[in-house]
Amino acid sequence: MLKVHNLSVNYRGTEALNSVSLAIHAGELVGLIGPNGAGKSTLLKALLGLVAMHAGQVLFEERPLVHQRQRVAYVPQRSQIDWDYPVTAWNVVMMARTVRTGWLRSPNPRSRQAVEAAMQRLGVWDLRDRQIGELSGGQQQRVFLARAIAQDADLFFFDEPFNAIDKTTEAVILDLLAELKAHDKTVLVCSHEWGQALNRYDRLLLLNQRLVADGDPQQVMTLDNIQRAYGENLQPSERPAEMPFFC
Ligand code: ADP
Ligand code: MG
Image (tube, rainbow, N blue to C red; front, side):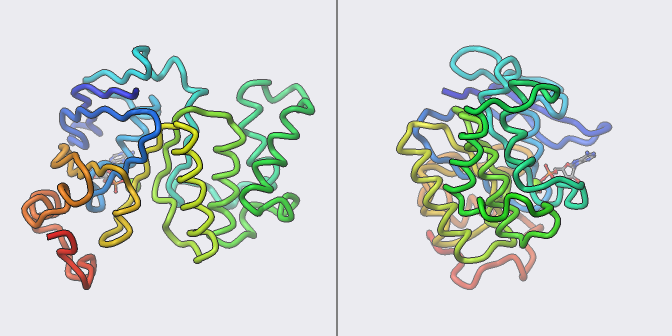
């Protein structure tokens, strides 16, 4: 189980997360939702120790998660990746393995096999020699997901994986999420989606600096909770046609 206790993060004095507590069980597929700037990406980064916590505790199976970083596969949000970095799709996926073996050693056969299997699984093996920056948004997302599964992790953090992708990639991601769940992995997916799509999660965490609601999708997406999380920030363009879907 992943347990987060009273996590707070400040950026140069500005509060990004205020005393967030939550728990996620193995085999649970959890959606972390909230408006832009709510702190979703910050929460993932704080769990990983990539941004400093002002206060709080993050435990995975009763031990600090930062000491078990190799058990977490993390796919950052598109905007946080440097797509001009000169690296092939294969190299991106192999990074999952060099974390363990080190950059200086050439990859062992087991790692090569894991990389190929992951790339085949995500349908990007044929793209292995292409530069990451040349691929479409959906293909890039699938390469990063292949990196995540090549890592043999127990915890998966995906930041906005459904952004800027095609229908094929969406189907591949949904299939992958179901498979991870079936293998009892712990999966946390950030999203600013609305409506029917939220039913794909077992549980939703609705965030806006604080945790506004935590429960199954129907419980969480009430008009009251949505207003508490989105407040005046809810732009007409962000409002889906079917809103409030769950009310
Ligand atoms: P979300 O992913 O929900 O859109 P973020 O976690 O990216 O939200 O951002 C939360 C808040 O923290 C926003 O107000 C954002 O401007 C701010 N923020 C994010 N990253 C930084 C940073 N590196 N330095 C300063 N402020 C930041
Ligand atoms: Mg974000």
